Length: 224
Image (cartoon, rainbow, N blue to C red):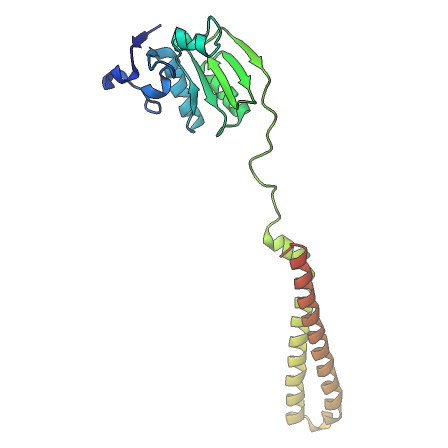
């Protein structure tokens, strides 16, 4: 195991630090500023960061023996070896985080859902604490495409009826004009065609009215 102890994290040469997503200050003892660089542990921490592609918020990493005693740490805590990290779950799904941590080689796991962090270390293999409750999915329930929603809506049916009736009325009017101009023998039919045109117009108006009502009703139901 390659480890190097510094009296303060500011003493770490820039050339000795090769973990791009972390800084000596993040890994140093919170109580004394001392830093024990445990290279295998930091390599796994960086590998975990790369695998998750999300920042890791380090709550606690190396602890000097005196600081470990002050915070009530275990007498043989892996934190004193620079081989343990407490990572906040603020921006992680605990289940996904645990699986990724196991894949990169962490063996010890402590779960602290009330404090919202997970402890990981290099072993031996063990686990303790209450697991985090299962979280709901991050995505909203899938909604039908707008086209499918509209197909079910009375708006389209009423609008279609209004459109067909409007075209029918226009067609009858054209037929009236043609018959009146070219077929004098059929002139007695023109009044009936006129009545048919007004029927189409009435249907069109009814369709428009139903369309307006249906749109308002759909909007109220949140189906727009």
